Image (tube, rainbow, N blue to C red):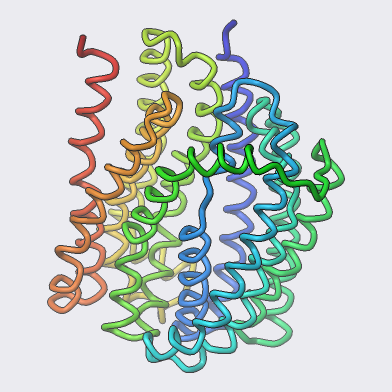
Length: 407
């Protein structure tokens, strides 16, 4: 059976999700950049850094596991739901307990109350119906389009409204909380089966055994992606972190979003054709060329016209991010290739290679981040990120060569 039609349809719908969410995110960014200061934006950056870190630290890999399963996954949903709820409470508790330490580490006492507030987000996320993974697994991309775009619209609308009304960074977190409430409701309305409070120890053991490489990979990948943020926040302060985080949002997210769209669509397709290496190779090469052709024009615009983009979108108070944008634009292209290439390894159940790639990138970052930041400030952080991700490319293509060409 051919999956080209489904892949094209999937890229169309998931691409539309990204276009809509990034358009809404762009509008939100412009508004909050005019209302909030870089310091306030840095406080939100600290809170989200901690949230993402603890979520990754407790990652079970259940979604990738469910997509990889070739048989019906309904029997796994109840156990996945219980695990998700428990994980959500654990994450929330860790953030709550560590809030004072984190505020002290970043020398930002104002982040304490924000961290306490954001600890509610993972607790609520735990109640989302795990059956939403079937949208991706069963290539039901139109359903996922309405689900994702609707959820993001609600979060963005209330975040903007609250920022305008209270002119405080807490508005962003309250917007996240409202968005999660809506996602919980929507997931239980449209995703089937609806989970029950039932736990199967054997299923849990199976998922846990699978997830060890995913957990290790996501932990390494977190520090690989956010080690530069931590160094900037710790060494240069919250205001510099806010500026660096804004540069990341403007330059890197649009580029890596393209790779993520193709990843979400091609991953379940590659799982279905993983038994045919020749067919898998042709599909991968076509999709990789597609990703590169899409990201290069965006990179070029960000690299050659950063000052105009910043002045037009954010205003002159953000011009400090201009040199960072140039470096992150190049970083984004390499990162997009890296993110997309992981689909091959995951579809062939080679989770250990994804872990290795993340570890290589993290090693390059850790070796250079502190000296680079001390020498060149936030521009040094972007060079460190670029160095780390560049080291992953030889590893990625060597293993792709082994899979497709070496006999």
